[in-house]
Every structure is written in C-alpha cells, then in structure tokens.
Image (cartoon, rainbow, N blue to C red; front, side, top):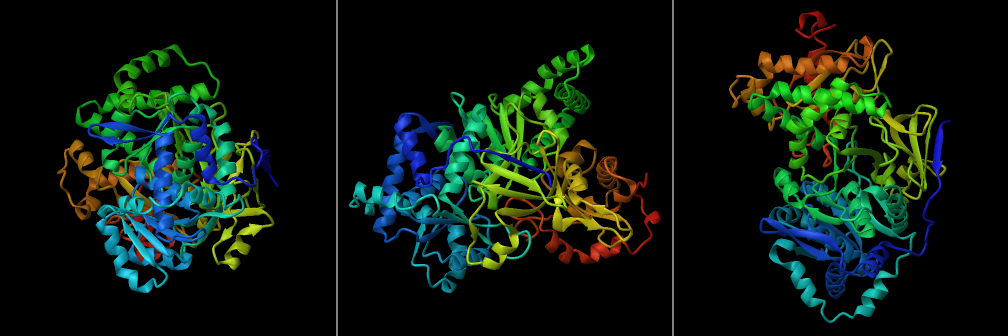
Length: 608
C-alpha cells in the first residue's frame, strides 16, 4: 500500500478556535488592510482592527436576538465582504453557521435547514427571501429570518449595542478545537446532501500549517486575492479564514461577468479558481484574437508557451529558436493576458476538478504558477497541493503538513490527519461506511509518483466497464474535451456497452463568438447549432484530440450534441459546476440508447 504522511509544522493547539486567528491577527497588525470593498471605480481598505470591531458589533446583535452558543444559523448569500463578516460574527457569538448555496432551490434550502436543526437564517436578496418563504411553513424550528437587502444587519448591530464586550469574549472562548465550527452540506452529485461536521481544529490546524507550506503565496508583503467562487463552498471558505490568519488582503466579486474589470482594478497577487475559469480565460482570449484576425498568432503563442514551460519543467535546455519566439510572444500576447488579470498575479490555486497539463503549462509561461490541489468538503478543502518551490504540472501536489494520504488496493485515495472531518451530521451509518479506522475513503482513484506527487485519475463509482471488460475513467476523456471553447459539458458513457460514446452540450456563452469567427450566423439556436456540420466537426476535433491519449478500446467512437444546456438550475450540475452523472444518465437515457441503436460505422465520427 502506497502511503505518504507529512508531520505537522505547527503543533496542534486543542484549545484554540477560529476566533483566535482573528484576535492574533489584530494583535500583530491592527492597521493592516485585511479587506477591500468596492468603492466607486476603486476599492476602499478595511483594516484588521476595523474588521474586528465590526465583527464584535454584529456578534452582539446575534446575542441580543437570542442566538445561543451551539445554535445553528443558515446563511444564503453571494460572495461578498458581508459573507465573511457574518461568518466571523457567528463564530464570536458561539453559533454554528450552516451555509446554503445562493443558487439552491427551495427544496434544497428546506433540507439543509431542517436536517441541521437551524433556528435562524440570514438571506441576502429578495430572491433568496422568496425561496425561503416557499418552505417556511415546513420549518417549525426557524424562529428568525434576517434579510440583508432590507438592512437587517444594521438593525442587529443597533439592537446589540447594550451587550457587553465581556459577554462576546466569554462566548467566543466557549468552543475548543474538538467542537463543531460549521456544518457544510455536500453538493449532492449523488443522492441527498450529507452534513459534514467540521471542527474548529480542522480549520485552525490546517490553516496554520498551510500558511507555512504556502508561505511564498500568502506571506509575501502586499499579498492579496480577489475571491469570486462561492464562499459557501469549503474551498473559498478555507481560503477566507487562511487569509485572515496570514494577513492577506481579500476582495470579493460575486458577478463573474465583472471579473476582468475587477481584476484590473484590484490587482491581486494570487487567485483562487476552478479549472473552468482558466479555460474561459484562455478560450475568450483565443476567440478575441480570432475575431481580430490574429488567431494564428495566438495559437502559435500558445504552442510556444506550452513547449517552453515543458522544457523548463523537464530541466531541458530551451533551444535558441524557442527562446526568441517566446520573447516575441511575451511582448505581443502574454503581457496583454497578464495585464488583463491585473498585472500582479504570480500564483493561482486551482481545485475542484483536474486542470490539465496544457493549461498549466500555458499559464506558467505567462508567469502565473498554477498550484493545483486536491481535497473535499470532508477534508476541510486541501489534503495535497502543489507548492511554490515543489510543484509538478498535471499533479495535485504533495501531501500537506499534518496530513497523510494512502492508496487502497484498488487505488482509492484515503486521507487522515488534521483536516479530516468529524462525522456526517446525524448519519452514523454513512460515517461508518466512509472510514477505514481513521482513514477517510474519498471515493477518488489516484496514483503517486516516486516523489510523493498525487495524480487523481477518476472517481471510483464512475469507472466505466465496457461489454468487453475494459475499465475506462471518464475524466481522462471528459476534461480535455471540455477545454474546447464551444463545449459546455460532456459525459462519457459506455458501461456494459460495446464501445465508449459521449453526450455533449454546447457553451452558449462562447458559441456566438465562435460561430461569427467561423463565418456562421452568431444567433444560431442551440438546436440548430447542434446539427450544424461545422459545429459537429469542431466537437469531433476535440474528441479526436482526447482520443490520442487513450487506447483504442477506451476511445470515444460516437457522440451526440444535445440541443440544451446542463446547469445547476436544470438540476444537472452541482453548485461547484460538477456534473450530476446519475441524474444525467436518467434524464438522457433515450439519447444514450440512440447512440447504441445504430452500428458505429454509420456515423461521421472518426474511428482512427
């Protein structure tokens, strides 16, 4: 059994809780700009001591409103400064937050609040209020609802003016490391979401050790980041708390359509993103270049960037010709992309799904080191991550300090250590099923290289076994296909079938630009585009490229382009944009059957 375990750099402190991280930060650097909030066309800084004062004031409001230590409080909101303010204020009041994705349906909101036993809920917008109102009658435990859009946070602060500082100090010190800090529900790609009990020690110990491991990223003078992925997800939640501990200035941008302007004005030093964001940045740049008649130059620049980065990583000498091309493209292409991201980004932490070596090498040549990592809600986010001084593109990095990772006999990734959750809330059967002793069984399949770098190759439950007995990991095919600009999502099928096939959806955001660049009407409907020969040829090209990396028995022989999109609203994606494979297989069973109803040789799909 392959196993890598790294001792903690920072010793555990069983008495510490998350509030201590803010208190320590204020003592060290009270005047450090810990946050920045939008202010006209720019940003206004908020110091550590200002944030601390606002946290205490809001915590007093929660106390005055009757929130008791240990009470569960739901929270539905976008990624804004107020999200982190509420988060920390609830910790100071001794409460336990139950974050709810801002895109959750009324039924999902009902389940999270009912199962957790929440006695109060905070909502950000009229839309969130309306969804909660739909199920309010089914939530008898819910005593209070506060709406941010009607100014309820300010009212809470005003109502809490009579609560003493001593009472908040008492409240914030009640919890020790073993106590529950938050209850986060899994995104539910299979079955009903389960509540993950994450303790204060999970956050405190992981944050303190990760700050040491990622010192070059979070501890450099002037370190800053702009959060735009949902803070309800453990990935951004962990980074938010890490930033407070490390003194990183944090901004927020909930509207990803405004991301580029926000990056330009905020100028972060590192980013936190999922692979789809990097794909969008690359594809948008490519299509923009194509529209300006410079598509050939961009593709040559991209090829040179990847080649240059690969040679450097392999320790090989970069030929003079490549050096000259790289210098030229740096002026013409790479510098413009760097500027579009604010001009100061040095690192980008990527998680949630595999990035792929091509994009890793491309951004590396831009001067952005993508530190791909791996983790789940159950591991408080990262278990492994590539480090500034120890990284390999195409892997999710080495094990973090205080964490152990081993591979089961079937290649399943198993984790133990400071980051592993306590249990599933009120679900002892699920808890028992997911642990082997103190090892958490992730359900992911992976491999280690000799230096301890982990590579995730697929999901255990998603392995396809063809009628011929060939085991196929869908992710190895899906990830490179999804990188194509016009592909929205893709699901590989073929379990107990004679060959591998795929369901494909188009990206409605990128499609009009691609169509215009290819002398086609930019307003083609998804239905018409799905049948268009040029569109089919482009999808075929993406599939042919993916097929080059697998054996013939694993290659995609047929595909169908669906005339619809898979979204969170349609029920086919989780809030972190992962596909709900089981739901898709049920809803599109007829399309899958049709793929196998006609002999493979009758399609126009390349079998080469």
